[in-house]
Structure formats: structure tokens, C-alpha cells
Image (cartoon, rainbow, N blue to C red; front, side, top):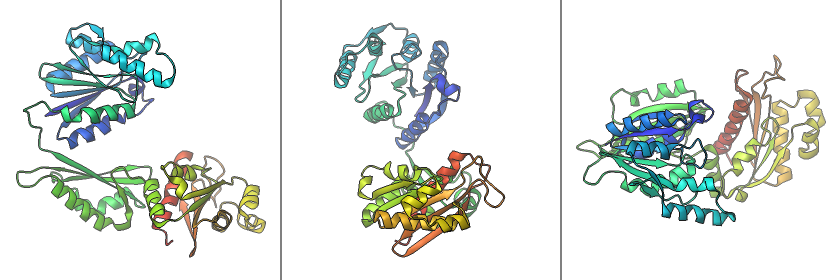
Length: 413
């Protein structure tokens, strides 16, 4: 079975927004044994969208159109679909009830524009949207089934899971099932990691193994297909185990894991508490730790001590240390972590101090220089990081946070 995905929105074609929905849909369709042959991105133009729908439905079994179902004048998916089907749009009673019920929860009536979302082609069916206003639409063009989903990611994902079981036409088996797994690593360069696992990356191999780098995290994807003798789960599981053996502590998680979520589980399981003292990261590390639900169990306190005065007043960093070594130094990072742990009463404390740029660097202390310290009952570990003056400020701050989280993950505790 062949599928295509059409993403709708001028914000996508102009590069203002990155299309993450198509990537997510492709992964989930592959897990159902439905292979995506083509991604198409179309601006908010009715004729272009109609042409894309018509072409995709002529060559594929399943087409998912993502976006363009909202209440504004540039939401054109329903109109283009009506033209492809050669049918008028009609107000769907169930869709009307769904929209009205949603606005009752909000405590206000829907506007006339909101009611536009209840218009669907005459022979099409609606897909209930349980967490938003725009119903989805299901229709058929010849042998092809079209599913129009909202562009809001959480609405799209919820609707997809509710219709996934019906995605394959009855009586038509999907292509050989595919298993996709991913491992996430931190602390190595992509070229070095690629060298260590190159024997897994032979062209034509099943499973196919590849890498993707994003802001210091290198993910390894494992894509396995069924053979006549072996279900895809078997080679996928074998490769995952072997890759973990080869890479050891570089692997911090799999699937939807993040460094923050892994650290959260570790702290919770070990019943440890943590506090943060941040200079160059300005609270970003505390944000990462508290992004995880239930973080109040382990995250006790966060200090943002951007100035020297705040380091002295809030953390007890000695004036003499700042005068002798400067705020960006191993000595001050150590004192920040020790002071943070002492004043917070936590098992662990992490500090960051550095130069995130774009200005403020010197020959001795260039932009991208960051010191990170981790204090626990066994002492203090301090790490000097040189992320590079060429990197944007946000990337340097993000890398510093990831490094700090990784230090907690690998810490002695």
C-alpha cells in the first residue's frame, strides 16, 4: 500500500514554520506497514491544492492532507476537496454539534466563521475532533482514500490514532510491516559515532541504519522490514542491543526520550533532589528540568545569578574568587554549585557560567566557553566546554544545558 502526505500552508512554503507533522505521520504510517512515497507542501492556494489532491489520489492508495481546515479565509482544504469530488459543500449536523459543544466548554458561543468548519462535501464523512474545533474529513476518490486532518499537531495526532485502525482498505494487505526504532546519543561527534557503527550502515542491509544530528544530539534510526522467514521486530531488536553494546554510555535513551526526561526518571527512581545555579543559561536549565510533569518531586530551587553581585549574595561565591579568576572560570562554577547545594539543601546542584555571545569574548575566554559544575555528596565535578564562537547564542545555551543534564545522568551520586 502506497501513501502520500500533502501539507497545506503558506507558512510552510515560505519557511516561517517547519513541517514536523509530515515526519511524524510518515513514522506512524510506516509502523502500520503503509509506506509513504511522497511528501508535497502546498501554499494556501486553492488551485494548487486541488491539483495536488487530484494527482496524489490518482497514484496512491491513501492520501493524508494536513492543515487548511480552520475557520479563516486562507483555510481552503474543504473547498479544494469539494472540487476534486465534484460535489457541493454542505453543513454537516454532527460537525455543527461538535463545534458548538467545544465552545460551550470555552464558555462562549461560536462565531459565524467557526461554523464554516462544519462544511464538508456531500458524500464525505467527518472525523471527530475531540480536542479542537475543526473536524477532519474522510472521502474517497476512485480507489484512493483521502483523510483531511487539522494542522495543529496535537489535534492531528489524536485524530490520526483514532482512525489508524481503518487506514488500510478492507481485504487489501499492507506492504511488509516495518519496524522503526531510534536511539539517542550525546557526547560524540557524528563522524566519530558513524565510524564506530559503520558496519551497521551497509547499503541494502536489513535493518537499514542511519544517523541524524540535531544540536549536539545524534540519533540512530533502525528501520527493519519483515522477510519471509523473520518478522521485522527480530532484526530491529538485535540491532538495538548491539548498538547499545558498541556505544555504551553515549546512548541516553530511545524513542521519545529526551535528556531531560531521562534525568527526571533517574532522579525520581533514586529519590534525589536537585537545584540549579545559572549564569549564561539564564534559567534554561531549570526550564528543561521542570518541563517534565511531576518535576516538583526532584526540582527544589533554581537561581539565576547573572551578575557578580547575585552570585555573591544568593550563592555565597567569595568576592576574592571573582576578582582573581573572573565569573567565567572553573573556580567560580565550582563555588556556585557548592553554594547552590548548601543553600537549597538538595542532593545535587548544577551550575553554569560562560560566554554565550555574540559579544563579550576575549582571546583567553572566547565566545562559546562555558564551565559547568555538578556538586553532590561526593564532591564537585567541573567541566570546561568550548562550544565554538561560530555558534548562535541560543545554540550555545542549549548545548550547555544538554551537557549539564548529561553530567547529571552520568554522575556519581
